[in-house]
Amino acid sequence: MTGVRLAVLVSGTGTLLQALVAEDLPIVVVVAARPCRGLEIAADHPGAAELVDRRAFGGFGDEFDRDAFTRRVVEVLGHHDVELVVMAGFGTVLTAPVHAAYDGRILNTHPALLPAFPGWHAVEDALAAGVTVTGCTVHLATLDMDAGPILAQQEVAVLSGDTAATLHERIKEVERQLYPRAIRLYMASLTTQRSPI
Ligand code: GRF
Image (cartoon, rainbow, N blue to C red; front, side, top):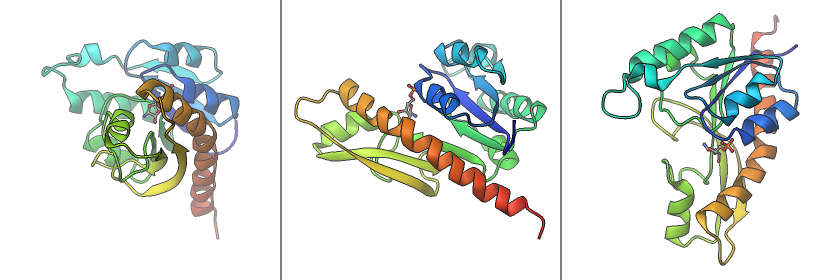
């Protein structure tokens, strides 16, 4: 495997992960926050599959120890000598330790045209606002959620009769094309940075 060592963080259905795998990106590890389809996809891939189970860190309520969970994720990434972290439907906001360890090296894709409609309900919020065009955004993840520098965006039309599910599926079709391309470009920029003069 050549290129920048990639980690993909998942916690859902993993269709984006599947697209990244199909594009033959140099994924050395997939980290899941809970047992999920993404983890099963990872198990069929030559890279490692690691479960950092939220339930071992207090689960999904007030008891969740977000810092301890984040530190464990960073530890796992370190074990695999990861250079670039790619979030692909990862439902947990990570805290400062991951940004300290991977500053400028965490990518995310968001199902709206940021800065419009940040947050967990981007597709529903776009529909509720009555916009005729939404889309997706690949951006650098920073401590502030959905607010990091934008790397790529693509529009998706809202169709009459769209539900959140139909619209999100069309957005994800675009993300499955755009995200691998944006990741490759970003990887190339990192490789250029580390080349000897
Ligand atoms: C994508 O729409 C992404 O923007 C959002 O989560 C979705 C992941 O889809 N953060 P999947 O779980 O890979 O199908």
